[in-house]
Each structure stands twice: as C-alpha cells, then as structure tokens.
Length: 587
Image (cartoon, rainbow, N blue to C red; front, side, top):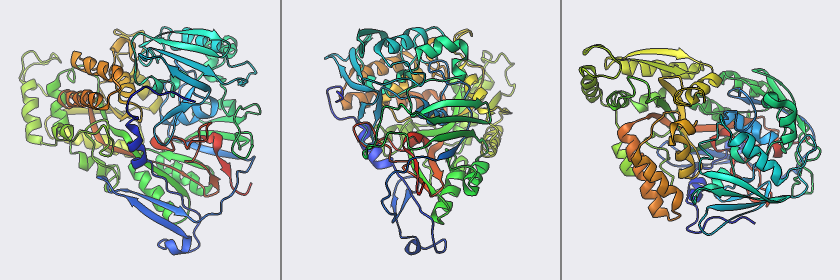
C-alpha cells in the first residue's frame, strides 16, 4: 500500500481524466469514411485546440500472447543510459521503461503507487520517507536489489559531483539503510511532492556490480531490473533488448511479464520516415510530438491502416533563452522577441491548426493549475510594441551585448534538423527579422542540442549551457513543484534549469509549493510563478504539444499498461509508452 501526503487529493486527477485520450483503430473492410464498415465508434473531447478524436473498434477481447518481437521507432537517439549521467527526453523514457523499473509509478487517476517499492511512508512533516523494497527482485546480472544498492546508487552517482540529477535531489540529504529491504530518505525540509521524485530517473535502481564492472562504460552497458535485458547497441542505428527470464512481475492471467521475446529500438529522426516505416511494416510502433505527423497518423488510423493513441497534456513547444548570454540576458530583448511572434501562425506551420491550443504557461486549459489571468497577461503578438521595446535596448548606451547604440540586435537560434522544425525556425527568423533582429539559424542534432542546453559541470557557472536561443519543449505531467524546481533551481546545481533563470520571488513560491499540501495555497504560489515567467519571459511558447503513439493493428496493450496493484497506468501522455506489457495479437 502507498501513503500519500496528508491533504486534498492530488489535483492532477482531473487533468488526466480530461486529457488522457486513446484512439484505437482496427483494420477496415470498407472505405475511408465509414464507421459502420469498421465497427468503430468515434467521440470527440472538445477543447481550445479543437478536441481530440477517439476511435475505438469493436474488437474481440483477446488474451495476451507470449513471444514475438517488435521494432520501435524513436524520434531521437540518447547519449547514454546511466541515471544521473545521461539526459533522458521522451524517446529515452520509452527505452528506460524496458531496461529499468522505478520505485513508484503514476496511475491514470494521478495517484502515485509503489512499483519496485512494496510501500512508501512519509513521516508527519514529510521530511523522512521510508521505502520498503519488494523481496526477490534481481538485476539482469543476477545481483539482488537491496537497500544498500539504492544507497550506493545515490551516494556514488545520483548525488555525486557532475550528476544531472543534483537539482532533482537538491532537497534530499541522505539515504539511510534500515535492513536488507528497507531504507529512508532524509530531506532537508519537508516536501509535499516527493512522491513525484520516486517515479522518475532519480528512483530507478541500477546494478552496483555492473557499475563496478563497466565503470565509465556503464552508460553503454545498462543493467537494471526491467522487463528486458540489454543485448547490444549501435549508436544512431539500433538497440536490441531481450526478454528478462527473471522478471518479477506477472499479469492477471499468471503469465510472467514481459510478453515479447525481443524489442529493437531504432532512432528515426525524420518524422515522415517514421510513419512510413510503420505503414510498410518495417517498424511496429512509433511515436511523434509533431502536429503535422500527428494529423497524418490520425488520418491513417481513421482509414484503418494503423492504430493511434493520442494525448495533449501539460507540455508545449517553443523556445528557451539562455538568460546569461547577451543580448537575451536583457528582459527587454526577450519581451520584444515574445511580442514579435504570432503563435497561431507557428501552430499552423507545424500542422497543428484545429488540434493544438495556443499556450501561455506550463499548463493546458483543462489542467487544475491553469490560470486564465496568466493567459491574459502573457505577451501577445504585437509587432509595433515589439519594435518599441527593442528600440529601448538598441539605443541604450549600456546595452549588454557591448555594441554601439543604434546597432541591430543579433541572435542565434538553434533547432534540430527535422523538416518541420527547420520550417519553424525559418518562421521565427522571419518574425524577428521584421522587427529588426538579425537571426542566425543553426541546425543541431537532438542529442548535442540537449547537451548544449544543459551544459557541463566544468563550465563557469556549472551547467550554464552553450547556446543563446534553442527551440525546446517545456512542461511535464508531474506535480508543479517537481516540474518547476527542476526547471528553475539554482544554476550551478540544477542541470534542468536550461534557461538559467532564477529570482527571489520564484524561490519563495517554490518553497510554498514544497511545504504546503493545501491546494489553494499551492495554486496561488504556482500562479505567481507563471505571472513572473510571463513578465520575464525566459521561455516562449509555440503551442501545446499534441502527441501520438501509432502502431500496426496487431500490436496490443499500448496505452493500457498497469501498475503492480492492477491499477491502470499513466497511458501514453508525452508519447511515452511501455514495451514491457505489449503483445502481438495472433502470435
């Protein structure tokens, strides 16, 4: 049983119930237009973005089938696979779920329940969290999962110098072992959102024997407790994982998970190629966070070619500013650039018209954390105002870029070389050029693009990043404190603070979010953070992110994975799914 902090039910519940949308389409016998021919029913969840269509076919209730292999197409490669050393975006999260297990998982209702943990219990002031592990769990190398292993992970990697999780774990002082399966986290102060941390990368145990064996090469040889065992990895080509014969979970029928014998992960950065690969059968399952492909995948599903599972949550595309780098260190430049873009036009360029809502904050309009007042306050498209604000900086003798008054402002905008993102970057260039900004465009592959934003522990300050403006996705489905403390913590200890923006006002509100379990108090603090971000604009929004997982019709159980207690899991928000509970119909 899990224990959650005292206070009102977690407000993420309503968000998930409203936004978790799954569309499942079986092969059709008739033309493109007829639900009658496919035996499908279609519903639409209305919203500012035009709604998301759910199509569910009348399919026989088949039982899971053991065996078989699938190929998964991912939007990007990942640099390495050691928690605390790697940087893991959406594509990486899918692979991590195959190799590792987290201590806790989030269910479809927003509740956080034990996973590798058997129980998680906080003390009264939420500063000491006791975790009891499930007995009998072993890593892929045969070593046992114990409390000592979790402590070793924490002391030697996760909390050690150079860890990418120092910000996430900034409030965690130590881990103390009680017995073989029991340990407790001691926090510097109580944290109402700490359960969120236990669902993420900071809480996925890895083999200490494996770390001792491989050392610096562990990131190329991951060893977890997950449903699949690492077999091989050819960077930028494929990773192969095979069924873990000693996996600790079984399904409701008594079958030992996972169902599949093998999964091959292939990075396919080109969006059109990824969809074409599923259509041709070269790839079985893939995902997208691009509106243009979302629309194409939906059309293919509606015609019966494949199945899709769609979601729009607290995630949005846009741009981030490195506020340590002139000229975007000056809020006047950032405000001018914010007023200089037309968000609806950018959404159209990405193919999201009628699907993707405009975004002004970290939360979608259906989220309980959304603020209409912030939505009204966020800088709107106004080229004349943008030019006026920019002129104040241009003519300032003390302007931060060191140029003479009257000299044009020049910026560098980086984006991965995906065709839709190239077009997006060119649109930014055109908008900003129209207000007198010289914009240099740079194409950067996604792995170095992420690393450039995070930076290095060896820079001054650490994790300052090496970019000026990056196209970027911001947001997440976690508790506001978890999301925002990782995005705006102290620069030198928060690799996730890619904008490098900090302030006393923000820190004070983060403290309220951490300490309080009262929703109204936390809402007010969160709203004030959103107001500050609207005023200081360390980041811009292009629009909400419509995501989809799409697959061949024979693939089963993509969105309906379950937690160990049988509760329905978090689904496919952020286009992340779990291969460990997928099977192939008909064997």
